[in-house]
Structures are given as C-alpha cells and as structure tokens.
Amino acid sequence: MGHRLSKIYTRTGDAGTTGLGDGSRIDKHAPRMEAIGDIDELNCTLGLLLAETLREDMHALLVDIQHDLFDLGGELSIPDSTFIGAAAVAKLEDAIDRYNDELPPLKEFLLPGGSRAAAVAHQCRAVCRRAERRVLALAEGATVNADSLRFVNRLSDLLFVCARIVARDSGAGEVMWQRGRG
Image (cartoon, rainbow, N blue to C red):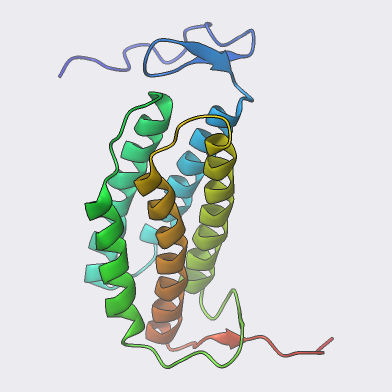
C-alpha cells in the first residue's frame, strides 16, 4: 500500500465542505457527516475503554468492533456501498447472549459507574445511542444499509452488557438507581 495520508492538510475543506470516499463533496454539517463523525467518536471512546484493564476475550471483541466501526464509517462515506453485513450483527448478538448469561437479572436501572472502566463502557453506550440516532436521521433522506442500522443498535446493547461485566469484574459492583433519592 502506498502513502495514503502523505499530506494531512489539503485546504480543500476551508470553505466548509469535505470529500466523500466516492470523490463527491458535501457540507461538513450534512447529516451524512454528522453520522460519520459520531461513528468516529464512538470508535474513539472504544479506544478509551480498551486502554482500561479488560478481560482478554472482551478486549479482543472490542478491537474487532473498532475495525467494524471503521468499515461502517467507510460505508457511510461512500453512498450506496455496503461493508457491514449480517455476520457482524450476529457476532454482536452472540457476544450479548454469552456475556448476559454470566449476569444476574436486573431488577432496577443502573447508573453509569462502579469503576472507571464500567463508567467508560457506559459512556461508549451513550455515544453509540447518539450515533444510532444520527445514522437513522441520515436514513430518512438517503439509503443506509439495514445491517448497519442493526449493527449500531446491537452494539449499544453489547456495551451495556460489557459495562455490567466490567463493573462486576472490578469488584466495585454496579450502581443501582434509587427512586426518589435526592
């Protein structure tokens, strides 16, 4: 592979547009760019989570998901392309089921916290939900791969379950919401 990013600044975006993977240009604040930006931010927050101490299997899964998110960003940057498929969704569903089987049923809502890593996992979940809303907003006016929509939806569920596992594994436990407190 050659030098893909041999020049970091190009000055082509100074007027408020940016280039897509198909060579077209759109406004930096267009719904497509908002969705791409939130997927990028989600990948960054996953990087923060991966900087924490995690179980080996979860760490490996989240690294794989980072690659999937990069693929999703690429898919969004090339209109009418498809890089995320049903197998990526199935991978998330399998992980959700596997991890959730380790946990006791929830009897109350959770607050983000318990440990730093659990709080970061909850932050990832919240950023993922925002990214999902942005991709859904994009889908109102453009074609978006249905598997990509399912992928982002399942990913937030997985991140919730990961937060629970991480809180448990840290020994700090989960922080339960208490109705009427405060």
